[in-house]
Image (tube, rainbow, N blue to C red; front, side, top):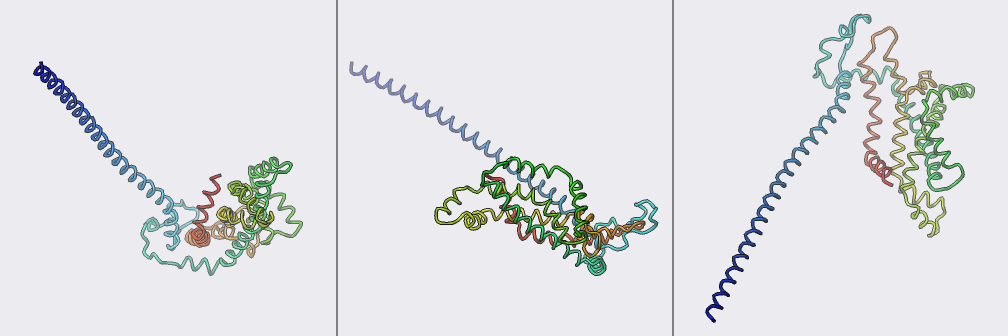
Length: 333
């Protein structure tokens, strides 16, 4: 009996051992398959990541070429001479020399056209007029827009929604509708052909949009910051200047840069209000390179355009970090 019992125990233990081996074999096979699948997925994901990265950089290179090539081609035109020859009535292809299409000029540092533009076209006066108009519009327009936007963002008063909608509606109409009545009033006040008169017009065009921009930045600042400052003894005005203004500084810089560039590049209003050469801005002064009944001077035009762009490029690179912060802070509420 004891021997039979021992044999049964041996059989049971052997069966259990076999079942455990089977389970271990199955679990090992499952883990191996899982590891293989993970390795395959990692390999596929790494390949996809490599191709996506390559495609992303190729797209960036294409966009960069599209952005830089017009500036490069303008510079190529600006350093060449005798761009157009022949009769004005001849077809344009017959007026263009063959060497104009060569991408590599003979002299990469031929600045004679730039020197001509600066010395012979009163460029410095036009530049000073543009800077005066742009800086004046930016400073005065920002002061008005910041206070208006803060009022709309923080205070509750009657007709608030109606006033905000009215400011937005004014941006839907073309500037020509506003220019005509303002021109008639300015002619009676003697503000035509003057820098202050042009600044006032630009301010009236810039304030509505700047107010909406600054309101978005003020809305992103929690009211608890001001309330905490006023609990500590600050007045409303002190909390505004010491707490709110530093918090929205990137937004102020972004709005100021937008206002400056808009006023600096504006053409139609400046052409209408400032006709005399001593009060003209750079976008209007560029018309002198399109003389009537003559071949346009495209070499001088290209040099003039590059010189006009230099101040804006310098300001943009100086304020680039603040501009990025301002865009992000205005987008997050």
